[in-house]
Image (cartoon, rainbow, N blue to C red):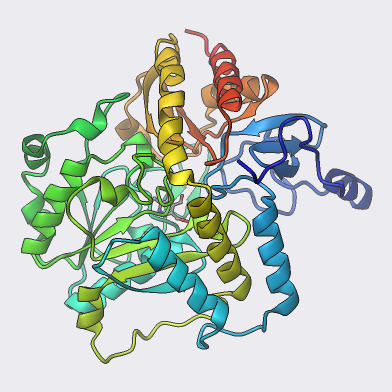
Length: 460
Ligand SMILES: Cc1ncc(COP(=O)(O)O)c(C=O)c1O
């Protein structure tokens, strides 16, 4: 990897944000009870972060820890080429709304479709967005417009975002877009659209992708009823630690096509090799191809908000001579376009899709060892995305109340003391580990040692 400082030269940023905060206003907190409303994904005790470099995070107390919470930055923090591309764009780019064509936007579109989607001849065009939530809302509403139908289909334990229709198809109990408190009170945002939920298999380490077509058929035996007169079915590949099998995707795709339902592959998490397999996208593990692919997190390198709705030639044909009448001032942002182009170029030039697949084989033995930990109920994962459930509580029993996830917070805290930052994913008993494509083998080893240490915080 030519692109990063190694461990010995990795340094905290020259500015010290922690000093700034405490000197300017001692009462101001970045999370918790300060003026910034917290989201519920970081507990009250979450540390304040002052910088990052490659796979590292720098904390206000001076500690440097491996960042295993990295969903948006495939090249890690402060990647020199991304920083430079964004700097250059900031110095040169005009401030335009989405309506205009510019060289950098067109380059980003060509690079995305020509490099990341190379060989996928069914792909027609892309519209950029800012967040994964927005991309999903746009894709779902496009399907409603094209089919003239309203109902949407998703799978159990899905998360597709917190905006509009994307929020409607998010069916995890704790993510409803409304208010949860620590008693029994939940005030969810009422759904605007009819949403139907398909069963989705939960598997354990190494089993999930091997689901046969017969097994997928049987899991989806009632899918035809759910798909009847629906506009779209949207499926992602990691939420809830459920790593979608190619057979499930293919069986569902065929059923959707037969029912005239458009299939959206939500690759907001899984794009750019995240789940290994040697593919840019997870849908490429299967044979069928989606009508629409939605992208988000890694597209802007974690630095800029960039998302995308990639539509097939068939969808383009259905749009015909018409214009897809949705618009935003800040979508297709010039800085974001520059970041997206550079992220894809670096991944391609440094062969990082293959690297992610190799890293799967590096990480797997560590995870198998962690699976033997008495605190662990279930582990699953692929490539750079891993899911650890503590104990054997069934997620279906969760209420969505913001109960304090004491157990996971204890694990996160102990893991942090041991040198790595992991996330709780805001689920009661879940530790989520998500890593950048540039993580080194020895850093994987240190991370897994830290998690092993962290799990000792659970009393059996
Ligand atoms: C599968 C999936 N889709 C969509 C989203 C929403 O993306 P964003 O947070 O950028 O709005 C997420 C976010 O975690 C996600 O995991």
